[in-house]
Image (cartoon, rainbow, N blue to C red; front, side, top):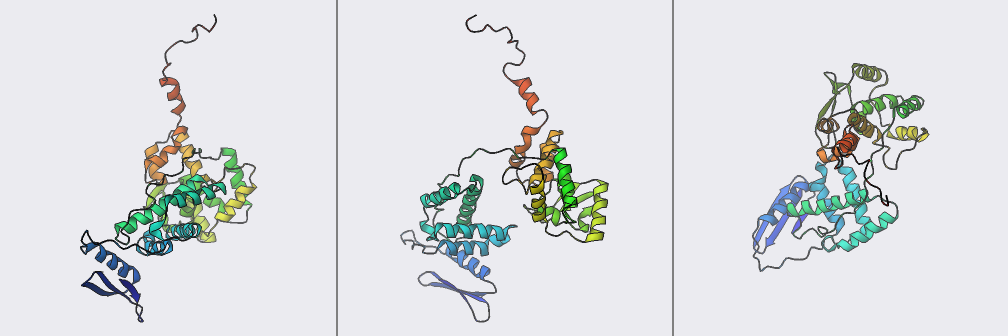
Length: 336
C-alpha cells in the first residue's frame, strides 16, 4: 500500500489491502489520496483469522496525517498542529501504536513540575486523544486509542478575576498614553460585548449592523451579534475613518496591563476584559442563558462558572439553608 507523488504534482494511490484485490487511482491532492486509501482499507473485507500487521508509523507521521485529513478544518488549525508537534518532541516521537499511558503521564508530570498548568496538560491530553479517535474513525489506524484509560489531572479551579470600575478607568487612561491608537477603542469594544480580543481586532465597518456588532471567525465558527450603544458605534466609525482597520495590538495591551497599579492572576491577562464583562453582567442580574449566547459558549457549563456572582446567589444560601426559620439564639450552651 502506498501513496506516492507523481512528477506532474498529482498523487497516486496503489492499494492492495488483501492479496489479489488491488486498487489504483490518481488524485489532485494528497488529502484526497489519503482519504481514498483509508476508505479502501475500511471497506475491504478481511477475514477474522488474518492477523493485523503491527503499525510501525511514528507519532509524528500520524500528527501530519491528522492535520491533512482533519486538522485543516479547525479554526485554530495552526495552533493545534503546533501543540501536537510539541508533544511529539516531548515524548521522543515513539511508534504511535506503542505509546503507553505511563510514558505520557511521566512526561506530563515533568511539565507540571516545570510550572505548566494542570489545565494546559489536560488540554494536551484531550488534543492527542481526539487525534487518535479521529484517525481510527477514518480508518487510518486500526488499533484502539492507547491513551483512552489515562485520567486527566484533577485540580482546584480558580475564580476568574475581573476589573473594578476604578481599575477600568486606570486601564483606559494608560491605553490612551500607550502610543497605540487602536488600544482604547479595542478595550471599549471588549468591555461592551464580552468578545475575545481577536474577535475585536477582526471587526470591520461591515460588521456594524442595526445597532449591533456582528462577530465572524469566532472560536466555534458561529456568527453572533451583540447590541452596543450608539456612542460606541459612532466612535468605531470615526476611528476607522481616521486610522483605518485594526492591527494586532495584544502585545500593546499586555504592556499596558503591566503598567497598571493592580496585578492579575497568572494566565488571565488576555481574557480579563471578557471576564469583566461576564462578571458584571451576572452581578447586575443578567440571565446566564443570555450570557451564553453573548459570549458564544457552545455549552452552558462554561457559562456557569460565573453563576456564583449572581446577586441572589448568597441570598439563597441565607433563605434556604436547613436552619432558616428557626430561632437558635436560645440553644443551651455546653456546660450551662
